[in-house]
Image (cartoon, helix red, strand yellow):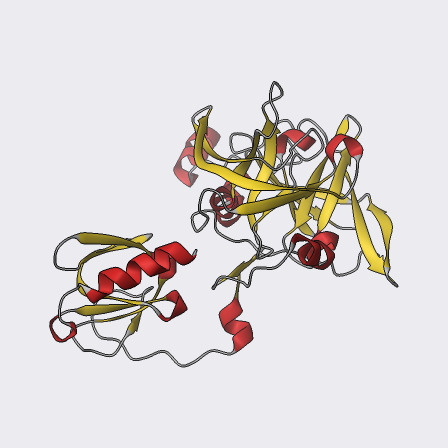
Amino acid sequence: MLRPCLLVSALVACGLPSALADTIQLKDKAAVTGKVLAEKPDQIVVDIGYTVMVIPRNQVVAISRDGSPPSSSKHSRGPKAVAPATTAAESAEARHAFYTASTKSPPVRTVLELVNQIGEAVVQVRTPSGLGSGFFLNEDGFLITNFHVIEGETQISVEVYHQKEGHLDRETYRQVRIVALNKFADLALLKVEDKDAPRFKYVPLGSSDALSVGERVFAIGSPLGLERTVTEGILSTKTREMGGSLYLQTTAQINPGNSGGPLFNLGGEVVGVTNMKVSAGEGLGFAIPVEAVRVFLEHRDAFAYSNENPANPYRYLEPPSRMRQHQVEE
């Protein structure tokens, strides 16, 4: 994380004169001076005089154009009024319908500190044919696991470990509803609906794009049924192609039972969902990037589970009214 910041600072010193160019304010109080050539949903292209720099949008705080007041990187071109300051709580998290995402990088902590803080949010997902892992997205009981953990099953239970008076109590919830399924992304959205269920601890979603190869990550899950097992390693690569999809590869040990569990960065954010390993080797685990989880959640209606056809992970929409009327006339 430190090395890219130093690189940006060095490039700024050699950039165009600030009076004749745009200024892109970055996180960690850094800035880039140049001419904005293009703005895309995920990046900003800047001409800094002798080369063109591509800046990830999630690293941009604001843009000041030719001396105009800075505008948020989320808005279109043109001068904008400076947004009012937000509170620390508002700037730390952005709440969505089913999950929480940090808007700035959290402080790095030890695995010991993080496990004690977020361990309650990681659960076991049991079915008559086996078990896997999962994690809560919000306090209302919505959780993520792998599709293959619950594939073909409707009798699902979730085991949660609540911290009470310094120790953990295992509680089993059996009223679990399947909300959405995506077989091809190997993701499932569940919800605990037991009447006596409390508010659940949950974990925020981070960004695997912000990770660098070699950064430390850790997983929590139930490999081979050994609940609450923590394994640590590094991110080996972010672009391992398997079956037409890209996965995060990690040296953190992943085994059957880890499936559906979270892969964390050292800020305590979920950066992936563990789902497979290479059985012929060691330290070859894989996780679904968290960006795919966000897409699944934001388009969950397209993958809604239907009780009328439980074998099908997709819900088909009603035909257009003209077609229905034509069918009635026939």
